Image (cartoon, rainbow, N blue to C red; front, side):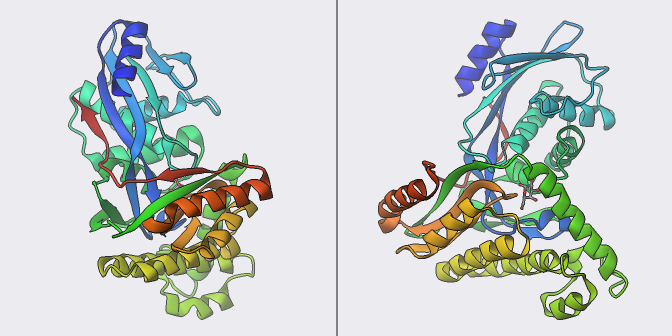
Length: 381
Ligand code: GLA
């Protein structure tokens, strides 16, 4: 892929680029907790986005998407978001660099990737790859954490999704064979070995993508913020749902209206599940780990209401299958993939059975994506 991007770049713009790579991510557990300053447990994967970049002597920046086979030109001194356009990720990052006081010159940029499904954070990977490429091109000294924050802000302002920090963080800080136990309050992480002896992580791609997912995501975030405002009357020190211990759920139930309580409950219990999951993983208790994945799915589906019939079906069928320790929907929801922890001896049978069942129920041919936990963003030599 690196050579393909470099070659495409050369053909289009007539020079050799610097190439940056940033991976997509999975999340073991801890969904919809990052924007409440909770805990999450993501990891970078091998697949990702490659960005070629070089300065030009023109009066504008030229962008090229190899996936869309489309060019886009913008004036670095005057640009604004373009609804739904892939160029937003570059313009959004440029805008963040500029706001931080970096004076960028005109450049050419070409990108492409191999992220095989939605829900694996291709947008965060793209933003982080662009940030990594710009930093190298202009020889800036920008800490990785700042790039992560730029990527998150860029997505808020240019793509209109009020996402948390998990995706760009995992893309930037990923480590081979490690998951990141990320504290989204301090924005620091611990690397936890995640090798799953005799078991594998396998994604099942439902191929479902709901158009309203972005607005539903923002609504869930608002619901959490509303709960915090109501809870603060009794918990004046609470800044987010992170500050409410699980043992206080009953008390919280008395405070919140019926529609808000289940959502708050999800966030509060999910943060606790991340703590438990990281502990059982350290002790290699994969059965306990798998059970927490199942609880997480139930909570996301029934309480937080971000699943869909296809994801529920995949998870519920998987729970019943031999060799499956855990299964749940992964990421923001309303489509995308489930993540499954399966004994290696049962992998083949699992895939053929789920494929057949899912196809006969929904007429969709599910994809199966094995994942290896991998290194985060970097410049490729
Ligand atoms: C999306 C967002 C993340 C996170 C997840 C849900 O991937 O980008 O910040 O909130 O959804 O856990």
